[in-house]
Image (tube, rainbow, N blue to C red; front, side):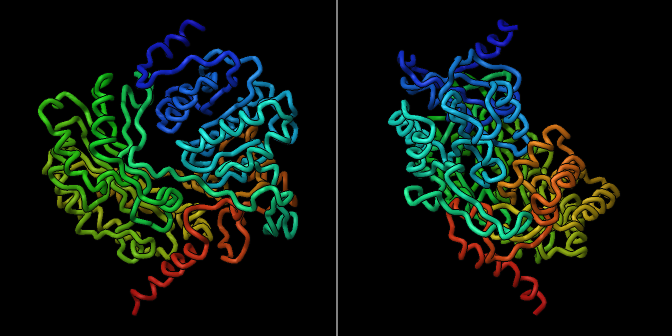
Length: 544
């Protein structure tokens, strides 16, 4: 068994040089709360692991739910890269496996400090605050260095002293040093304040601002995307769709330099694989994207395969489609959200149906076999007539590009922290809208891939949750990850926290204190409220 596991690690092709740890190096376990194939495909996990493995002051061991490297007997730090909400179950399982109390207030000097980072915790760490001693908010490139340096300064201190010292580091959040009070046990938050004036009142998400972005540090056939080398082309998105966490939370929009970042990274990756993945929320909006296409179109790269993340609709040119088709890509993905002009104005989605249709025409002309369009149901202000317009738009796309496979994926609107729509609840009519879309698109032979409405409810619960949810999350861990399990847990905890309706479906007042009030995102609340107000006036503008 051990030999088989080590064979998996031995198949990795590293693109950095791990250093030998010092004799007194800090023993660290760095975990991904899912299987190896999933974790090793996470660029964020790869980058942070490579950072740890490049410090002689650190001795790092990796841990996944199915395999692990040899673990230290007495780790000082246990870290988690947290990318998907429901992986919290695996975090609790790993803590139990390592004989570490689930709740931070039950740990003592004999236990490692448990820290976490990643998109889930940066967005809203409060539902998980009880499980972590330390939460790292934002981009890890500089934050990890600052965190390790500060830990070294108090390595031999007691647990409390360590946490208080780490709380002084920008981007390092120590939940236990903040008191949350409520107007009632099942009411709104009354205040979130530090325990004393030596602790900062607000913790600011850290932002990495270099024009040299991330690229894979390891390539393996065992990854979910087999043998792929990932290159981050852009970070954040300039479009500012009002529901979009990837845009608002990760501001400002940053682009990797073509000459000093992208080309060197691609050439490095091609020494170990012929498969390149271009990553980013809006890859084709890189200012030098045309030059990047020209670079990848060189005859010497005829043997490589290139895949690309979701692209902006009006950047889908015939040239782009041809380049991707010639490099092994069969389809592209674009987010359109809706076929309704009114809805797109509400969410600040700056495109037209004509641009969507032209993107499909260009995709076919360039040799691609399919186009995947993504939309949402239950968008604030959306009505049945807007759903009909989406159906008409998809039908028009199919007719304009006959023979091109059209796929429509559709999720339910979920409010996200740090966005203008964080105050708005999930619309219950979305469930019927998804069912209606499935029926009508089936008649038109358009493939429909809906995301589970029930999963959207769970996602919204965690997205808007506060610390009171920790007890509920522990219960659902044993009940299962269905919506019925969460409803069962709410019933069992009735009177100890607000009902599911409060977290998921209620519209919140803009003046109430939000669970992440003390965790500062890129934009102030006043700006988010302004964007919300602009969105809510759109239907009136269209009626005038």
